[in-house]
Image (cartoon, rainbow, N blue to C red; front, side, top):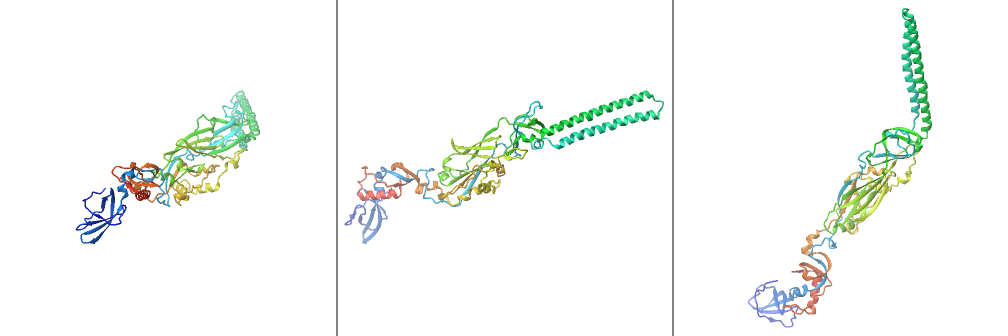
Length: 506
């Protein structure tokens, strides 16, 4: 309020009204006062007119805000804006910038996804009884070298013959040389005892006979066994029901079997095989949401994209995760089928469930893999993400490319949910990436509080407000206030107009 400088006696100009009175002041000049109290009201001095010497006319206009401060404070109205801090309700008065800003966070995929060399699996049918702890029917993790050992090969039979011939020839030569030496000794040295020499020759003949049994008869038995294995092993690979690679490094938790049964055929496996007894692997990964604001713009001006390798690019409604710091990704991997599934949750709510087949078939024997079922890539989406490679920055740029038109017309980036299968998705990056694509406003909303307030949109009594206030269809209270006049209709209408256009309350 203003401090009154002085009290003066004035005359009221003819035909003045209480809303806009004109006062005639006999004085040597105007003292500069611009505010007048009269008739229980307060007036602004609109202009000063010099009528003649020592006569001044003050044209005034009613200050309804000052005159009816108590009435206004008693008014209950729907408040559009006031100086109470607001971070939830969007302010449509602000302009939205068209150029987005992008921030990302990331978390590593579980089970050593494409960091190592992945894991090979084989599904076989076979009888593993009495085969030195060889594995039987089931699903096994197998090394790359072990894959090359599967099934009987023709070289095995040739090798059996070569081993028998080599061993026989080596020993035959030694024994024949010893027999020849003894015979030569008899002929060259008559003094030697003939019976001894003859017995030595017979001993060598006996040894030679033993060699024939060892390296011909036993050798032929080994060859026969190899022939039997050839016939049995010929169908061995038909017992390989499926062979595939998964882009996860699954830890061996059991002692490897040294051998593997393929039907009735048993093969030694380089590196051994681990039988999978618990096919479902499950774990949880948390990725932070890189919020860029601390107010309503996190919803109205923000788009959230979550990229999960093998699954694709998922649009997350920003309104569903507002005020949350992280998105939890529940991961499940079926080692029997190669199916990879995720469930996204935030703040106790499930955002969605997604899945993909991540296995890549290995062409072993007659293993049957339904290639059509696992090659279900959505080409357009996969190509868009693939063009970003494993670069976080490049992928983030792709995520924000479609959002440059402004928050008023935000459109989600196309997604490739559940489409990057068949092993192809393993090359598109090893990390889960969360990106926020945001469009800033022309002004930080918090700086507007003392000037034009921020949105309120609720019913309030104006006495609870200090600072800027703008109402909707307000009507000033007519309840009498001690020390204030009864407002006229015109004064009430003016007070209503001012409240609805925006005023400052003290």
